[in-house]
Image (cartoon, rainbow, N blue to C red; front, side, top):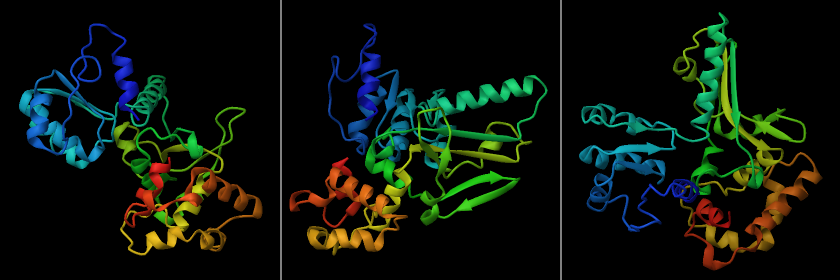
Length: 297
């Protein structure tokens, strides 16, 4: 979902030559060192838009060829461990070059610097972002995005770290005013606490970063989680139970925690619209509910 617009943007400049689609289309296995090394080392820069777990492998290939690397993903521990090796060959590995993470950092630093330049202090920092389908925009694959809505969260409040367990995250979503005409909610992400140090605002006693989604998204995700559709572990009993649709709607109303009948009708209608209530044998993925659900998105 990120690769196509990236290529379209770079293609606007006739001086740019891109591996795909302009002149040199290739196919390679990003998990194979033999496949990966030759194309990565032959270019001045590699923009890695593969799933984040493969970035370290791309970077290792780039180090061999002194190739610069850009990713849109959060800086992971696995990538951080390659920092010394990257510096030893004088290449730049630019991570978090996206909206979130990325542009949000630029705006945060700009505002913090403006406050500090005037002799002020930053006591609280709130940074929110995002929106759309399902009341949520998929900036990368649904298979990667949906589990993030089932993370735990940590943020600063009144000088102390507040921790929210996985099962309670979506229940913390609260209305947040952005501008008139937008009905959105906000909730914290899993990594807000370190940004007091990263942004050099030790004076801050509160700090939170997190996504925005349209009203209704959190209730929908809670229902999906309650019904098991976000589970990533294999369950041998899933295939048969999912096919028995006559039992599914009663189970939704029993298991999911709806606040009222209107919310119940809305979420069931959403499940039907996505196609969960019309699954057939051909698209059930071997007992994996999440892998069965994501192709529908």
